[in-house]
Amino acid sequence: MSLTLTLILTALTTALVFYAGWRGAQLPNISKGPRMIPWRFVMLMSAALGVLLLIHLARLAAGAE
Image (cartoon, rainbow, N blue to C red; front, side, top):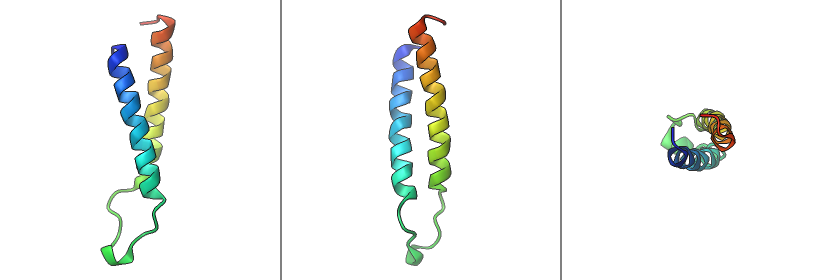
């Protein structure tokens, strides 16, 4: 992957981590029914992908292709 694509994916993943963290911290609304998206799990998986993207960025910065 190129540096530009990696930076874009890192920014999108970071935004998804913060959004999912915010949604997961909301109190459940009983009148709307159960949540259909497990926001805490989405946050965890997005954070794991973000760590992998940061490792990839470090490898790109070091010159290892």
